[in-house]
Amino acid sequence: MKVILLQDVKALGKKGEIVEVSDGYARNALLPKKLGLEANNKNLNDLKLQNANKEKVAAEQLADAKAFAEELKSKEILVYIKGGEGGKTFGSVSSKEIAAAFKAQCGVDIDKKKIQLEESIKSFGVYDVKVKLHPQVMGNLKVKVQEQK
Image (cartoon, rainbow, N blue to C red; front, side):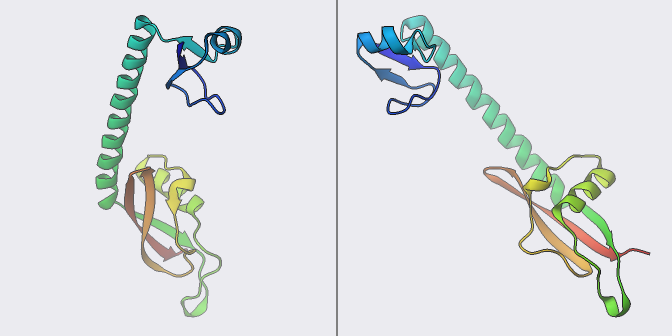
């Protein structure tokens, strides 16, 4: 019997796959536990529609991420940290502070976990910071670090 899996089943397959199993296994294990549906014409058509919808949503998210990455290139964020004599800084700028400054200055939320700093920013100046907007899209954001007065 062919079954469409509704959840991941160990040693059988992933959610959304069509697998061939014995009739007894399908009737006694998969169908009663709501782990799968019988692969009839209606259920196969529903699966095709769901997959098409997922692909459409994924394409829209990718396009939005690319557009936002282009928008990020033109932005510059100002971050202030305390400084001492001789241009020394007290502490460093973290991704949390960059995310908070971006929200305050641009009005858009960026998750601090998506901001990728190669090393902590411990001096004044302008830095290019990478932001992971989508698994396939990386954006660049200019961060200008100045002394707090």
